[in-house]
Length: 484
Image (cartoon, rainbow, N blue to C red; front, side, top):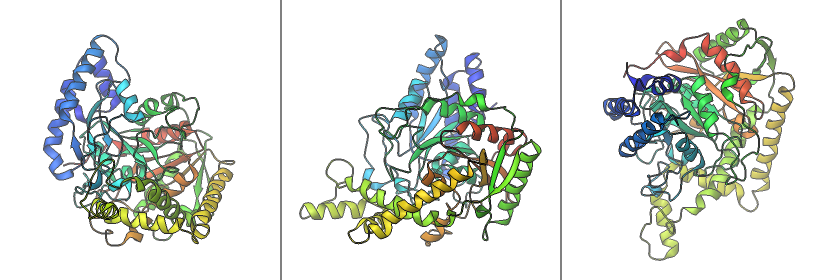
């Protein structure tokens, strides 16, 4: 039995019964990392020393019967979440040496539950990308096919979970950055409702869109992770003061009579035929379990990508103004202060980050603000209203996660617009602030995974979990593992 291949629930049972020790779990994790990391390259920083220290603490807690949900469980964390005194780079050269003096709220909550940090995972620089090719350090590869991307921006976290280099991971999702890589890597990825999980200590990309969530091997583990990280946080002004239910209670409930909306705008020309076929088979499977499919319309879906790339880049332009070489991170030499600013940002930011800063600065500039940013906010309201209207008639909405399976490394790197369109089915969720999950629903003839996306009402993650778990338990897609 390889402990790194087990789920949180399975490890919890073995650990609590004292059949295994946390150190043994960590041993198996790092054996796997040593064996595959040179090919997959999921991590920016591997925290081996800290992991064994945390494993010793976890063993003591279990011996004293003080174990919690994640005591002794190895979890990887996307490298845009602050971890005190541990490198947090956002995969950017401008933060290549940054060690935060404080801990993010989500990692604090993981610590309180006794987790073991295995490492900080790779991402598109400042979470800006859909392939993890935009990292300032290296490209992460898809464990199912090393010639393909793992998706992005949480590609390192998704690849690490798929490759069994950790048991679970945290990602962040601004326009699909948890769900799309989860789909590409054949794992489960949840983007919670905006405000459900604290963003304190998450390095900001677009503050009104960013949300932290879990990437796991199955739906049950996603519920466990959300139970740990969800909840109001006074340190985050956008954190919702709403009670957190036990999400695990939703698992195993019947879905008979559940109304599932099938939006016609998500089955469009250009969608990969295999993706569409498997998603339609998944809908039939849900119907066989008692769910009632209803065709619905989300008429403003076609405006989502343009709206997102106005609003997200505008917020990025504002948020990234703080990286100036003065307070922390990279500082380049310059003739004077202004030259130092210019040299630092020129050397420190990669091409995609510069592109988005320039787009956002233009959209916010005098004379263009009303035409772009203000108009974008108005369309965002229309997109949210589309979802509000549909959720008057259905309980969840089911769509493909991505219009294609994982594409090859370099295939879209020279065409930013094609890259942006890979998030066409995930972006609307962030604009509306609703929760959504991606779960495996099939494999292409080339053995690449595909994802089924389930969206829910604001703060109704329970319906998502109920639906996802019912589908997962009636299929075996989630049990398949890549052969690295």
